[in-house]
Image (cartoon, rainbow, N blue to C red; front, side, top):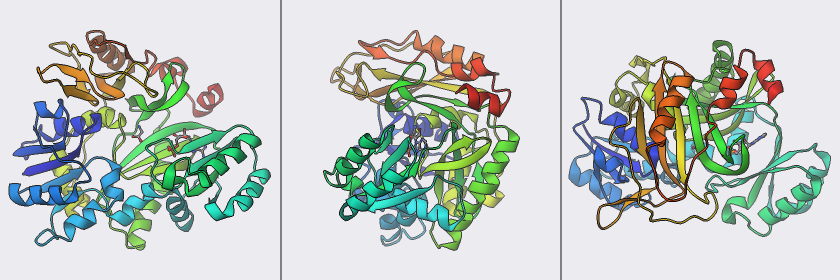
Length: 439
Ligand code: AMP
Ligand code: GLY
């Protein structure tokens, strides 16, 4: 197959790495890609929202399968656009239709969807700009902390957890009236704060059948011990010991099944990945959010654990034949550590030369925010620069492999967390309650 993959992050490098391991892949193109994807595929200088450019490329290059990595083109309707072009009605695409992508594109839509389909989630209310007074009055009635969420896409920044009422009130005003997150916060979801442990669950679906992929735990804060500002993700671990069979079966029965059934019942086409961010509250799962794509850096820890042919999985999703696909997963542990530019998630300098080891034993190094200078030197060009995934028979081995490789990577002002996975090792996660108490 000739395959076009859209995106340019570590997630897409991991996809490209996995796709090109399949004997079914003839040629892989990545648009726009990064220096990492260039090692395994051909990068094409096309933006992920250049719908016309993407359509023309598919047409002229005889592309058989399109895989869409990030949410933005999905929420903007790329899948519907491509399927509406002459001769492309049956083009194989991994990525949901625009109505499906609204599960991530509008928090209010996703909350209503969960309510309609009896999917456990935090209690909430939604307010628009002309309802500030009602919104402020609602806040007065709630317990603290309280969560404010911009309805639309806000590059991962649209969620505020407010510890006191004054902060909540001024934040609500800033979001609704002063457009703190632009158009995205013209509607705000006010949500009950859930206490517990977070887990990321990934589902592949063709809209009718589904396969549950390995789960992951991610590390969102910039600082060790989960301190400091939120980031796109500083690390991930899979599998997650506290996600035992009993808990995962609750996730499947109470969340995954009603979600897929709900999509089908409501006539929402969905052929793609669904990333369910959930909270384990006293042993019960609650949905925090849906994302209509794989996570980054979770993908870098999840894909290496899929042993069955990955292009077969992608074509089964896109072609609606997932029911007859058998997924095989590896019991090995993957630990991903993200290396970032010093200063991220605030301001940082770009353009420093990156030195990589010749070999990375027991680990894979995925590129995210890297670029090639005119002289061909690898440089840092984004906040999150590299994601190193170590693999092993257990978490200790996986972490040793990841950090062993990281020791050999250098550039000026590089930063990474040294404590990825340490909470899991420390607590042992023998019992869910023990773990929840400790956090
Ligand atoms: P989101 O963008 O929806 O993933 O939210 C970002 C982060 O905010 C989540 O990963 C959680 O850590 C936290 N969060 C969001 N909603 C809630 C909630 N209702 N209760 C507690 N924490 C939350
Ligand atoms: N790592 C979180 C995300 O991809 O949304």
